[in-house]
Length: 526
Image 1 (cartoon, rainbow, N blue to C red):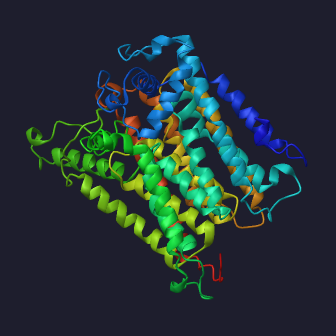
Image 2: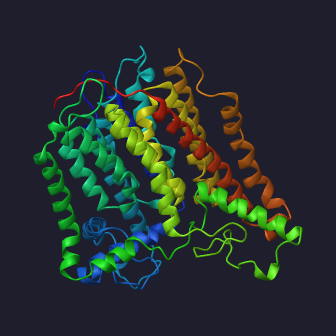
Image 3: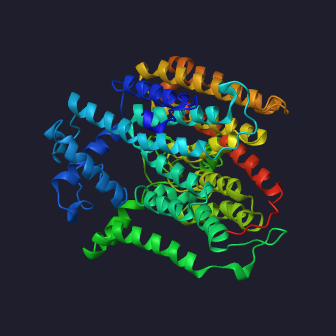
């Protein structure tokens, strides 16, 4: 771990932060884990026991392989270490298999691969402007950013309690962002191309990468008033980027193309037969849309404007992943969500091209792409909010306005993850960890920007404080009411809708900032 810190010059604090969070992860090993634990165990078994030609066809378990090939090879590599822990975990027919050695291996595999995330955070800290640095270590932007990323509450509970490998993947993304900040464009492009073939959800932010690399790397100069010099376009640089994408894609998909299995792989990666929303509504626009449809249907039934026999039986709050029909509002198709997502992304992409703001502008566009896809995408998982939260941490230590948006987005987004941990023993853990992270985030950023206006207005303060009563009602009041049997979905519905309002507000506020900020008017030659 110390390899990722700076051993001299009084900078051992980074190693201490990284070591501290690693010890916390170890303490979380015995906690509850979700079905994702079995998902990844099954993928270990598939990649270890079967030939490559069967990886994307194997369906003994319902948890079929649905990540891109690089992640499958990642599981394959892990499986050759796993066999020394417990050979039985690698049997495809051992469904829901678990043992103490399996638990230790899978937990430690997440902790160990998080080292890439630690290194990426260290590289990101090098890109942060230290002009606002205070006298005290804890007031320095780099220290604050390190805590916000290394000790991120959402990443801790999703990876080290719920169970996933997001830290490793976000490490790739943050490292690619750092390389673009450092003007090491081809390295950044390569890392992002590799990331896409580990997990395709990062397609959400691909438009930001594509436009920024074209604008800042393929065009080598700007006019004094901002627009690019068209005669500065470099075909060599464009070809080099295309070659990177082609070679990475060929390495990933080539074997399956040779086996005539590419359609099968793509059908696993993009399962549009699933419903609009996940079993637990992600707190996005469609959660608000679904809630409105529910309210209108109840009103329609009360006023006898709707026929109860004609109301669709598929319930958006039943906890099932299925296709359904809305009762009052028009039903939503995958194409409709795609159009909405593209319309939400386009203004940020245009700003990145026509109002260049350097790497900071790229980062803001990336966050808006992630949030727009989260808000309007098809079958979005609640965990996808981390795709916006973590990059927003980089902006939060730069400007007070961005810090305000970060705090609203992070607090709301993190709270929306609470339903992932529904077992009683984890209740105090998630409440305590979130309180500690939220209190630190707000206090540290308020201290950093203490000479500027308050980070929250009265409305934002009131909204964030409302998360407290919401948690009390959902966890401690609702279970003792008569509604629990008849309307068991109410806590999830309230959490989803309440958080959707906060995340949508943060998205809107960031968009206003991007659209109104002036471009960086500076001639650049690279």
